[in-house]
Image 1 (cartoon, rainbow, N blue to C red):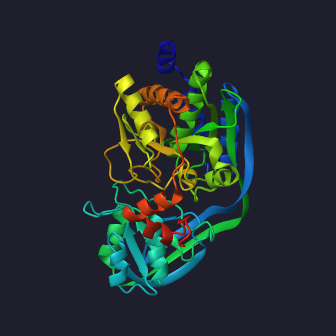
Image 2: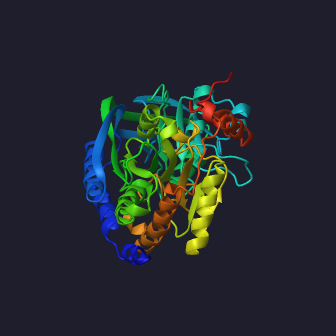
Image 3: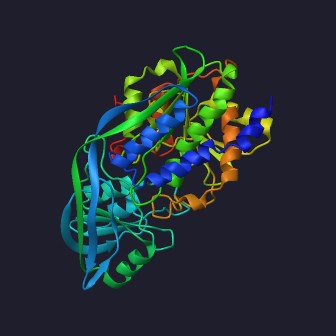
Length: 436
């Protein structure tokens, strides 16, 4: 009964796929690299699961060009944020600190170039997402947006702007390192600075990868990740590790297929980093009643211990607790909402969903969304240990003994309001609920 644990702890399958993914290079949504990674993932899943295939869909294409921040005679290194429009603007530099909503309400940024930190203060009561800061700048008339990293190491951060209805942003937006941003503000706040971005845009195609295991039935447990990554790094943590883990779980669950009471569908989404496009595509066409639960892996392996957002689905939290107790492994559950990964397009429709990630102890993304998101920062031991825990969790979620129920979307909306997440989602065009 425990032979599968030993085999998992000596398996090379998932880690080998992770090495392949980081070796692809640029996996930006819509790129040739993303398509290559999707095909390789499809082929890896086909070794263990049935009906391995890709499903294409259209997206707004965006290819990074050169960008610059110019102040006096000094040019500061920066990166255009994905889906920033091409443009050049000059305005007075204003340091907005953390870029909290109340900061924008109190400041005059009309026609100015604003700088906002990538983190929020420890005392603040909710997450302020990068795109919320960007759209606060847009709504208050800013001419350009500079996203300053709070992590040391001369690492300019990336991360998309734009909304589902308007995929390209309205003003130039760049990421700038903590060190460059600090110097820029120190030497040039209140002075005229120029921000220039250039990108190639147009129609593009992304794809989701699918494969299945288990009994032939309509209801499925979705085990998911995303294949795409930002073009500036290997994308090992975000989210090569999650996709490699999906492949490893296909291997482990193939060996335990007789333990599955529910059909398992492995889905590795495309275009997550530019607005959850691939998962939104699938959620829109899938009958919510046919999805027992979503087990979404995004940010695993970065630390040794696992955690998960359970979104108020008590049955999912209880399943995690049972697995944690059974294997004597720590696994933290957070009952609140986290609407920023590929489980969310299902959860917003009332479908039970988990976002599983690894606890790092860091504030914010750490190395994520920077050039430092590389394979050397992950450990094979952690991968194998977490594969054991996540295999057991998948079997637990697929079991007839685990009964999941859809939630009323009105209750989810009310909880988002209570957790002070609704305002930010409305600002970024992510609020999915009717206001009636």
